[in-house]
Image 1 (cartoon, protein in one colour):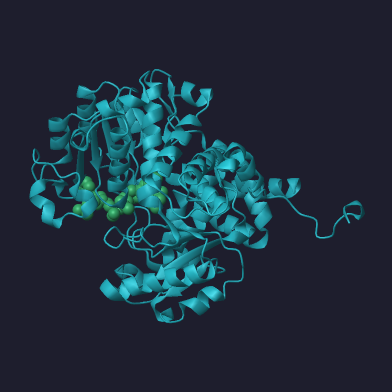
Image 2 (cartoon, rainbow, N blue to C red):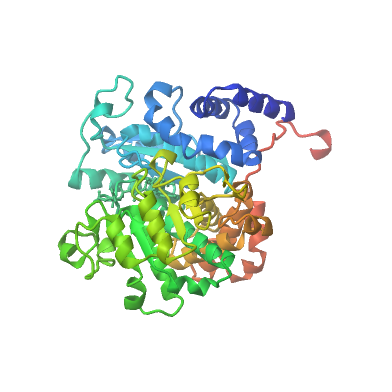
Length: 512
Ligand SMILES: NC(=O)C1=CN([C@@H]2O[C@H](COP(=O)(O)OP(=O)(O)OC[C@H]3O[C@@H](n4cnc5c(N)ncnc54)[C@H](OP(=O)(O)O)[C@@H]3O)[C@@H](O)[C@H]2O)C=CC1
Ligand SMILES: CC(=O)C(=O)O
Ligand SMILES: [Mg+2]
């Protein structure tokens, strides 16, 4: 395979853009899956941004034009009443990890309808390469309930249903039928909901399936991990999380997921609910979440409603009044963190955390270069999509970190599939955060990173799987293993990880 790998890498380097590289890699994957995964495992830093964010965003936007061969299962509203047969027709018999989207909120790009299928494909590529799930055990799914994107409804290449999105009961019946069909054929599968618009996400109680919402739970866990390691880098302890003040711009699935995970993290350090919740201001398009909006907020948002802020306050007003030590963006609004806002944060906190977490890169609330420049290189910076190192005028080089749920979901999927976990609990997610924070190397810390290097993602995923699996077994939530297996968990999980190597079709004489 060595020569094949060199050839593909050389071809990739000669292509003019990342979107061309993304298309070419899709062809490689269609023609030789083992080669594709071997390349991805060995070249994560180079290839993850091509297969995953940010390029996957463009791949979704141009999905119809670039479409060559179907990958994954498309289920549309027209399949209503037939989903059991559709799922029954999936050719692989042992599906363990499913990523499903309805395309209603793809990264920060909005409603991309059936073009959103690029996301389950990209996420599952990481499940296989980083989490070691074998490619024949994963299933990307697009639940096509229509689209409200007018541009797509007029796009001659659009591959989805040309109709407005189903809403209300008709929509939920579609999701229910899908889950029922999965439960019937793959009862032990781990089902990840991905990039569903926040007004329809409420599938986390789809028991008895093991379901996981990556945007809420995975993003919450990975963000908490970066806060722990950032505090340690600052010479503080993880317990000093309770002394921080958070402003979170974006109150959708990701923003509230992050706020909730940090809130739970703080409460583990002994603060009461009231004390912990007072550390947050969560802001949406209309300003901070406040008590006078309570009737209009979701259950998750209502937790963060304040009585000392006013509807309509700008982000700058909020920062001036609240004086955060940590500013996070999950708004999908590129450039939302202006120079004035970031400098204002630094007035009250000399070494703030600036986390513009929206994807893809154009939707990041600010760039690494701006954040470092506006804080004279003093901030801890992490973004959802990767940024290159930044050289300050002084010659000092700063290494931005990538805060992306990619450090969480592959490990959770590995634990869930091997141990046949019945559910993913908050305690497991907390252990996943701690495992990511503990996975940093001395080199990572010396470079000022608060997340591991992406080249280490396979090792990080194994650490996450061990931590999650241990908690799962202790909580009696594994259908396959028990407490006697805990000392051997790392060995058990690593031995089950897929390694992309060629397997001889005919056994050697000495193996027969
Ligand atoms: N780094 C990572 O691992 C992850 C990053 N993300 C990113 O997070 C972003 C948001 O995702 P998600 O929560 O699912 O999306 P949603 O659409 O559910 O939420 C977006 C939120 O941002 C708010 N918003 C819009 N404009 C502004 C503004 N000017 N100021 C403050 N808030 C604003 C919206 O308010 P309103 O409701 O009033 O419109 C809404 O609350 C996406 O870009 C996504 O790529 C998501 C998951 C993981
Ligand atoms: C990373 C991710 O899940 C998102 O941007 O939606
Ligand atoms: Mg997502």
